[in-house]
Image 1 (cartoon, helix red, strand yellow):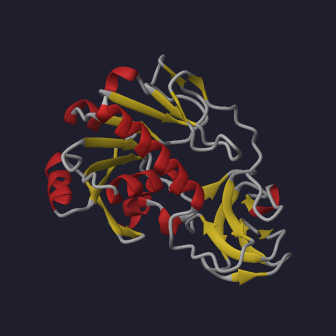
Image 2 (tube, rainbow, N blue to C red):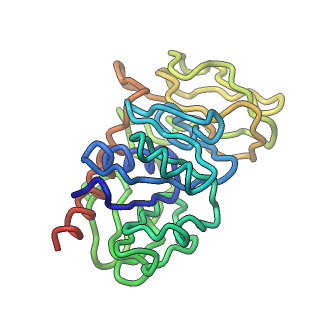
Image 3 (cartoon, rainbow, N blue to C red):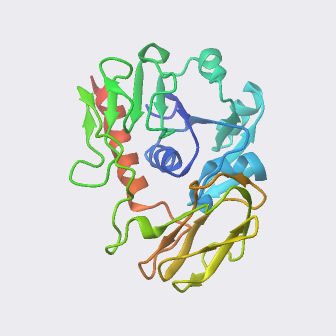
Length: 265
């Protein structure tokens, strides 16, 4: 009964990809994702938006492919793949009229999502109000309410501080020290020590504040602005950066709950 339920997800970054993956693994096979022309995912190994650059990507055994029109999307879905479409204006929603729309851009504000876009519209994180612009809101802020589905009100406001992992929060995140062209000096999955240079922005080095695994880095050759998130570190040992993260799994489970609740009612 789930295979033909049409779902379109706005965004194809890490969290959006975790949602798509969870829905796919639960039996939903008519899933499409909309992206901008130059996405800047940090955790690229688990982000379907990488198909924009590489034409296809396998995220934890699920394949996403870049599609340019409705025919290609249909053929990808028939092959058991997830279409990724460059469509920042979301025209695909108007043309294909999905049953479910999920805004997983995580922009911390509503960029134009409306409750009349589909039978069920779900918003992730702050910027949405359940019953006003979406039918349901999923809390994304780490803590006791992360992954809770709200049918009234809004998610917690953005704190601007990453969640703690082994006591580290802001030190886990790599940010551009200046405006300029980004170039990595290490590879995803490399083990580095606190103080090591992991990238450069222009001629300015980017050093990691903690020892751990390089879990995320944006692509080389992207012009960045000072303060932009360009990477992150994993302080825990034995974490496979090729697998969907715990937070992505949790948010995916929350969206699955909202979808199933809607279907069952």
